[in-house]
Image 1: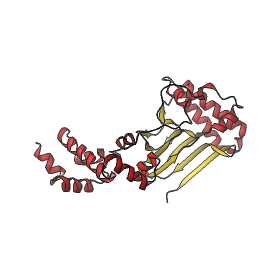
Image 2: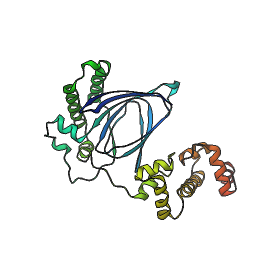
Image 3: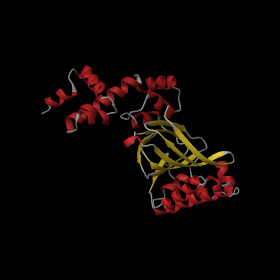
Image 4: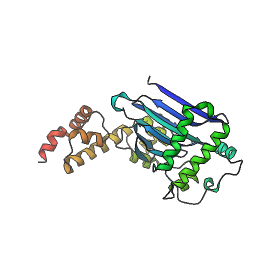
Amino acid sequence: MASFDLTHFTLLEKPIFGKAVFETPFKANSSFVDEARFVFIIKGKSNLYVPNDTLSLATSDCFLMKCDNFVNVWEKNEGDEKSEVMVMHFYPDVLKHIYDDNIPDVFKSSDGKPHGPVTKIETNEMLMNYISSLEFYFQNPSLMNDEMVKLKVRELIQVMLNSDQSGAIKTMFSALFKANAYDFKEVIHAHLYEDLSLQDLAFFTGLSLSTFKRKFKAVFDTSPTQYIKSKRLEKAISLLQTTDQRISEIAYDCGFNDIGYFSKLFKSTYQVSPSDYKKTLV
């Protein structure tokens, strides 16, 4: 089992600030209910999958995650270096406590357009200075107390708002603890070509694997395995016809992480290997 070292500071017996150091590759899934998170990647690279989208992330990126379901796949680092992240957790009751029940208007629901479950935040000097100041307390944990935790939460919120040139963060704050609703087909089509398992897709829809398979059959009139395979092969044919990509690149773009399996499946379906099919197009 890969090592995962976590240090955190709490308030109201809940983790508020955390720093994690872990071996990669590493895959985690989380379901946030009445919780949101700000994440800063100190070191590492990952693909963050949400029900209707995918976000590619790397060292020094930071992002805000609202109440929803997430699958985060961390890639192996060069030289077997460990990945490192800093996380701040938001909870409705903790925010009330921090602001003495006088929560800022920015956190109150609005009638604005719904926001996606995650938004990337521009890394700027204000944010980097804040991260450095928080790092000081992880190196000197005895200096962190409840009042300092409350102060650092308020500071981060203000830094994010000051960095919000587009208004996306403000919009997201207004629905931070309100889960989005997704159409079943929307979730499936968003991840047809991603290296995700059926269990991951079921997780995004909030269903057990067996219930997910039954609903999939009812919606698409075929099994999820057959449907996804056929769509990936259709995309592979299209890429072979319209691009100069290598077979390995096409396999990866279509959601296959095993080139041998891709070639075998392609040949069993079309009675010709991908490479031979490409030659017929010349």
